[in-house]
Length: 117
Image 1: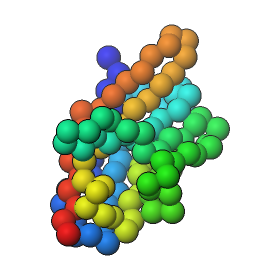
Image 2 (image 1 turned 90 degrees about the vertical axis):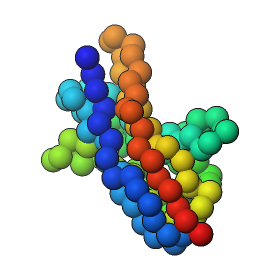
Image 3 (image 1 turned 60 degrees about the horizontal axis):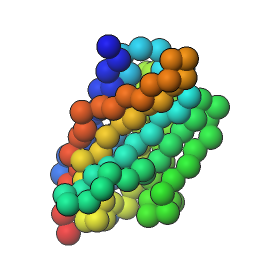
Image 4 (image 1 turned 60 degrees about the vertical axis):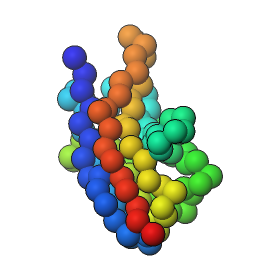
């Protein structure tokens, strides 16, 4: 069974930084894309950032120029560097990975990020 293990969440003041990391239990290079999503209380889960197998990235407008998604080929993780954090970034952040052959989508257990004002 494929697992995605997230780490790096926590409590930070507005303007601060956090780095999230997602470590798959299988070869990271088999995934077509890996993403970070977040879900705030009472809101729907939303896509934050995606990185494809080819290294292309995409971001939600609300995090552009503040967040950076990257793949660490040595550690075999996908990381989300979050800078200039705002209280509205407070949410549970989830790692997602998708693959084909077979088609599958995997989710991590989530990590809490809390930004205080």
